[in-house]
Length: 427
Image (cartoon, rainbow, N blue to C red):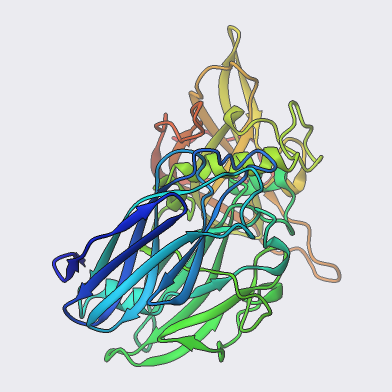
């Protein structure tokens, strides 16, 4: 939990583009800060006005940058300040014109809430080991692929438990095409596991790992700042490395999530603004085109999509779904694979996917699923395939503000989907 009583407030000096606030800590601990700030002229979707960058200093030392991706509205950005000793400290924030869009204008920092984490709890332990993410070199000043959210999970292991940290980036410049991302992941953000640390029952570190280029997960042997591992985004699909050349860095404070029986995209649901930021980046990059055909690498407006979250037990197979909407006065089904084999979901567990429907179509009122066998790998015989549908968690669309609307359907059960058979509705 957060304990605010341990912070003694002194007078803050705030103004446009600059903010200074001294504070006292009764004891040393991990500290987080919530920066409430507005950039009135920022517009993430408009070239030249994308964002103002602010630089955060603690006791005169550089801590990190924050890119104000959330447009002109007053917004909270929660960051980690690291481990601080008891006593007097100062947080100072100023606009960094070098990293700000030329027409983004000033930043108005309204306030900063500094919070000390309770000693001895999992929150403080998790916060103390949260990675610090250095920017990929070709994103600096480019307003793309910004790490805006971080979360962690705690999973049991044979020797203790592992803290697993994942990051949501505003986009993915390399890797999966945008239309395939929407079909098979239901988003255009990039969500990546970046770092894991295994602890024994006494809290001693047993092993560290990170997700490197090629999605390999080697042992982490790099540097730490305190207990925080230092990572560098090193590929266009946002894999990380133990070293790099950039000094610009980000440290969003991680939140804990339990993802049993849900997809990773529920983290975005908890921060609905992330959908709008992703859509604005797609539009600015020319990836949103009216009536974009499947396979073109572009998508229609995300507000035309119906999103489905479901869970399967799947072996050597792929799944597509279809949603039914009323178009005019006629109910019509729209298939998520849109005739493209690579638009099918070929992973088990809980997944999110999206399919575009005509503008002005009614709300989705039904969903169905179909299973497909996978072609055998070269030189290998076909393997048995099976799919069991276990959950449909959500069926929803986005509102005019890009935020998710309430779900129109859910289901829990156990239903076999015949591989290479016909469509099946949950029953």
